[in-house]
Length: 397
Image (cartoon, rainbow, N blue to C red; front, side, top):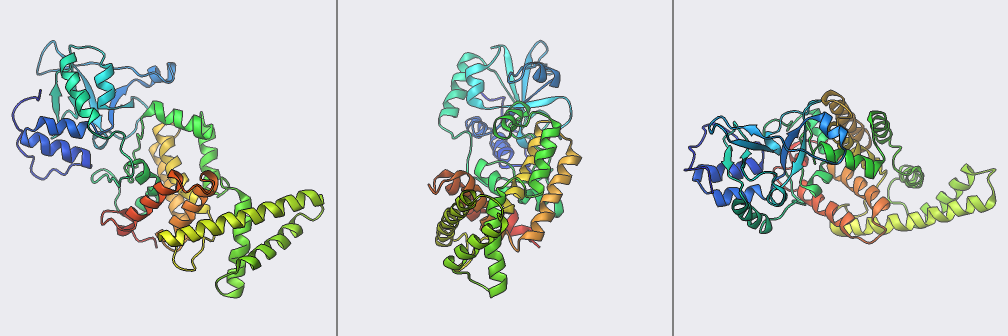
């Protein structure tokens, strides 16, 4: 099944991610079963002309390449995430996985080539019999991966302002097991990145992407109502020097809203006041759970949920790059701004995290404390404790 005997180690080479490390270790041992076990957990990327992708949205095409070592034989080249080039206007890459390739391989006489030109390089025949082995590896390994801290050790920033801005999006990166510091983002591939932005954000072009980034960086994507209600408590905390009783918060919020809505109908005003009272109840219940789970210290509370916008801005910059709605320089500028704005509003990664998670829960969770919350709690714990975490290695300030 494998391409031959074990390969000698390459002195001084550091695999860029955990996937290439696993492939490299298996290849140097000649352990091709282990190689395929790693490959079954990996995102695999194949290049295609952008014109082809744009002309048939949602479709992908496989382009065979002549194999110089075997004249007359063609290969389909797939790269793992750590071996991808920086995003360019053309070609683009689509994402696949081993199980999918086992089911939908185009031609039996085309071989599989993995990471050509690297110490992970390997070539495999792809007949129906061989693909049945691929399928067994795919069935016994988990794909796609979830809830894991993954780092790009070469080719991605590990320290400095860009890394700080990227780390603002790390909660979602851990939840999705994506590389937290991949500035040159390919993500789920060109086709799926465009689909993601269309389905979740209504973004289908550059101008819509740019408007979304600006709204996130301005803190305008989250509900301004949340900001008003939280702002009342923060003002009280400053004025009275600490903990604010919930009853006091409720009373002052009602007064503030009635003052802000002077001239509106009584019914509209009272409906908003009632909404604020419900929101205060939700926030206090979330914060009680946050304290119990270690997201907030005893007597701690969230001042603002703008972190949720800034964290999503850090990700939106990269999603736009993956969809080719911007270039690398534009994406990097947005990431830098997300980091800078976070520094203004928050004191620590823990402070940022609690605010981000509250915003996410208010939008999605409906007090179910399901995956919308559980994935973030797990990511928070990983990011605040793992020795390889950016939150452990990059000072917030």
